[in-house]
Image 1 (cartoon, one colour):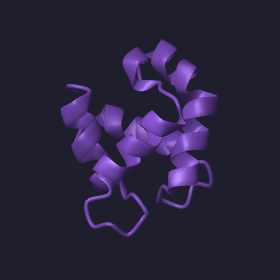
Image 2 (spheres, rainbow, N blue to C red):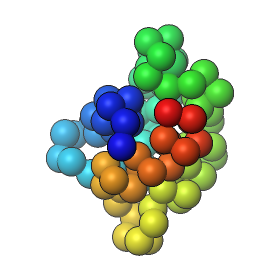
Image 3 (cartoon, rainbow, N blue to C red):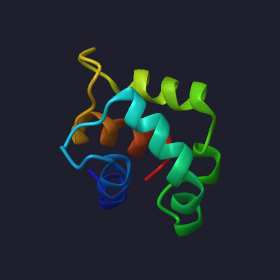
Length: 83
């Protein structure tokens, strides 16, 4: 799993508990998305609205427990963002 996925996960983990909730992902992408994209930690096309962020969450939630681990999100962002 890429270092870029790790940096993105840490940026999205607003409460630093090692897991991401849907609300956390949507809030983090809305507040930090443009900055992350400008730094190269997120493709500009990855900065979307709440619906796009929610769809990314659903795609990554492999076990359906409504919480994303680093491993779950890394698989999706590495593949989807071409890292």
